[in-house]
Length: 334
Image 1 (cartoon, rainbow, N blue to C red):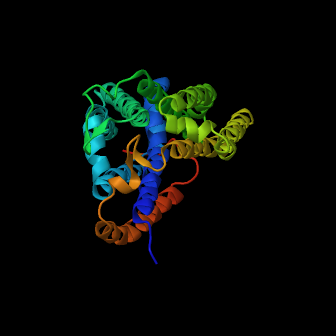
Image 2: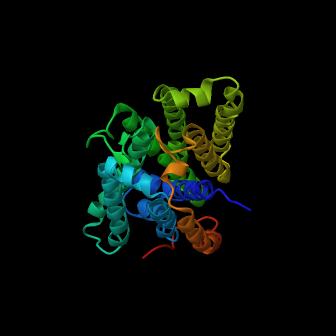
Image 3: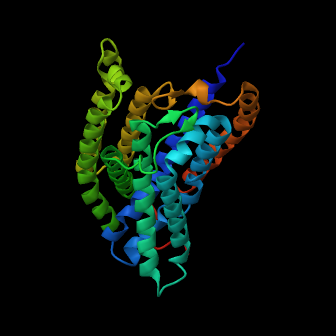
């Protein structure tokens, strides 16, 4: 029996990227929200909600990036030079965030500076992730299997719009996570932030969705042509339904519902992105099969991933299970 190994690996990489966005998204969202909380106990409490899981969440970024290099070397060779600047800033932001996470607890006199580093690193990482996504969606110039664009091609009004959308989306994830994990003043502030963050995300999703079909005739055909519009129409309808459930959860103060709905909202937008992209790994010219490594390499790597990915899923699920429920504000990371 023959398997379409490039397709299988594209699904694995897509899953790893989605897992990273969902898990590290609320981490980054809390960092972006940091200035909204009072110095001291409120910021400590917010940070303690992610203390047991934040570094494990970034495992999926390593898996996605490393997998892209090993499995789709052509895509890696094209995307990296096209997005050097935003990806470098993103990684530096993640480094600053990680260092600030450790040092703010140990340097009382400089805690304000490390709080700012935690905020700035989170904001930079989120913004650059969105900018990189926008640059990829709008298309990368490829000639003779190499990047043919300029240094600043990634910086456009569309990529800035997608960058802002990701920032607002992460704020929504972060605020709904805090609703789920905290109580008292921190939860009250999270409830206040979540509603405008949802409206902002919906507005930006709409703006990006309306703009995207005009970037490439392929995108236009996927979303608007008949009969494909009948297959894609459920996605925006489900977005509206999930948004209503999120608003209802906020209004009725059902602590778990907003976070679950926010996760569903991200999954639906990711599905919409997949509808636009497939079968391209680098729009508009490099497909999954053109970018893939030889089948022998894909088969060898698939054996290792069959062991590695279940292990990552198992310890991630175990960590979240152990630290389930509300966080006690009197306990935490030290």
